Image 1: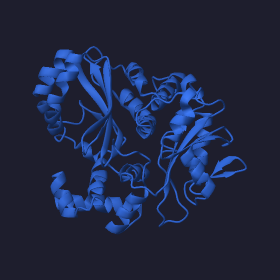
Image 2: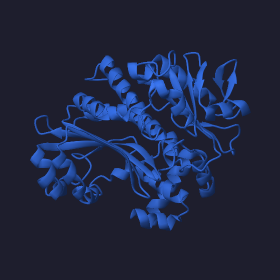
Image 3: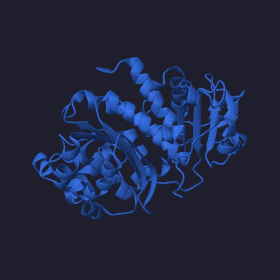
Length: 384
C-alpha cells in the first residue's frame, strides 16, 4: 500500500479486530487510523433507526464542546451533500469526501463550516459506512486539519482498504451487544448468545462451541462436526467459509470482505444460514481468548426473523448506494412509484436502478429480488 508499510497496515487491521471484542478500544484505534491518514480527529458510530437507539459512539481527539454542537448541523450537511455529484451513486464501500462530493460553494458558506469546521481549523473530512442495513447505520468519520490540506487519493485509498475490516468488526461487535469478551468469562458469555459461536484452530478443529452452536452440530445443520473439525452440509458457502478461516489464520490483512455474510444453503430456494468469521490468531487480546484459536465463526440459522439482508446483497453484487436504497425500499413492500417519491427521484430513474439491480443479481422479477434479500440475513441481534 503506497505510503503505508505492510507491517503498519497489519497492526492497524489487528487493532480494528480487537475492537470487535472490546469496543472501548475504538478511540485509540481511531487515533491510529487518523495517524495513518494524516487526520486530526475522528469518530465512529452505530445506530438503530426505528425506534432510535445508539449502539456505539466513540471519539478520538474531539473536545466535548464541539461534540455537543455537532448534531445541530446534521440536517444542513445532509442537504448540502445532495448537491454536486450525488453520493448515492457511489458504491457502498466508496468514501464520501467533503472536498469532492457536495457543492463546494454551498458548503463553504454554510453554518456548519463557518461555525463548526473552520473554528477548529478543519478543511476536509472522509466518511465511510461501516454498517448499512434497513434499520441500522454505522459510519466512521475522520477530519483533515488546515496544516495538511484536503484529503488526497492516498488517504481515500487507505480508508477504502480498511472498510471491509471495519465492517466486519462493527457487525460482530453489534452481534455481541457491544460487550467486551474476556477470557475468564468466555464460555458463560458466549452461551448467552442466540447465534452459534465456534472457536476453531488453524485446521478448523473445534476448540469451543457455545450452546447454540452445539445444538446446530447435533442436528447437522447449518454446521456439523467432521472428525472434530468444523464443517457444513451446505452446497453454497462451504468453500468460502473454509477459505475465510484459512485466510484468518494465515494473514488477516488479506481477508477483506471474505467471510462476512456467507450464505450457507443446501438448495437455491432454501432460507439459508449466515456465517461471519473473525480472525483471532494475531494480537494479544484476541489470541488470549482461547489458546490455539485462530478464528471465531458466528453462525445464525434462518429460523428467526433478523433484519433484511440488503447490505449483504449490496456487497455481494456490488450495488451502488442508489441501487441499494431502491432495493431496501422494495424489500419493505413499496412500489416503484413510492420508492421514487421517497428518494426524490424520477420514476424512470428508479426503474433504471431496478434494471441495473436485475442485471447484477441475475433475477428478472421484483418478487425474486425480494426473496433474495430475505435469504441473506445477517446474524445481528434485535435492538434492545
